[in-house]
Amino acid sequence: MIESDVRAQRFVQSIREDGERRCKAIEAETERLLSEEMEQARSVEEKKAERMIRFEQERMEAEFNRTLSAQGAQARASLAQKRMELTDQVFSDVREALAAYTKTEAYAQWLIQSATRLCDRLGAGCVLYAREQDMKLLQGKLPAGVSVSADAAIVLGGLKAQNAQISADDTLDSRLAAQKDWFLENSGLSVAL
Image (cartoon, rainbow, N blue to C red; front, top):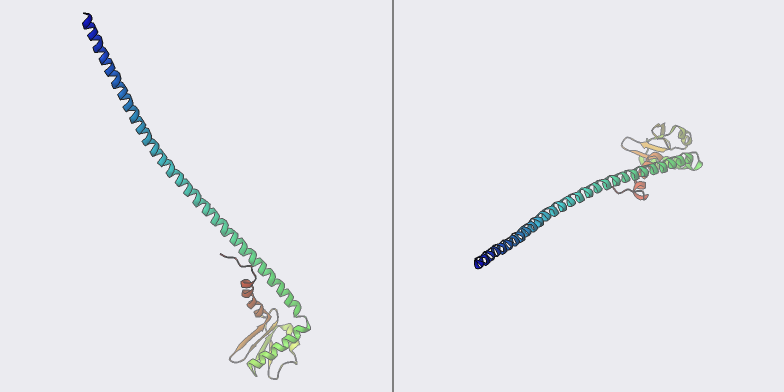
């Protein structure tokens, strides 16, 4: 009986060892599968996180670019406005200086020289146009056959002339207007848009 008990114990021991070996194998396989599943889940989540990060970076970059563009446009508009204010101030100052100049003897001489040049170019029978206040400066100083009429469109001073085919403008108004484009190009106040 002892021998059969020993055999039974060995058999049970063998079954137990086999069971333990199988449990360890199952545990190892379970651990391996869990590890693979965890690695796959981690990989999927990392890819999701990378996509989310890229999306957020692109969104933030686009928002930054929109903000930067809007601020740039606002700054350019502000500079353009300041440029126009400075230009207007310069030309206002020039108008004041021209108004003071028209009250001098130098202006009276220039006006007579302008009348002579215009009459020489347009020939006999030309008509001169001047400001009302400049009419008295020209009386008795024009070539024969030349008439002078008042022109309210001349604000700063100078003369316009006309004959049957041609007209000419030698007013301070037109000279100042012609200088505005030059001033904008050469003043250093340009704004790159």
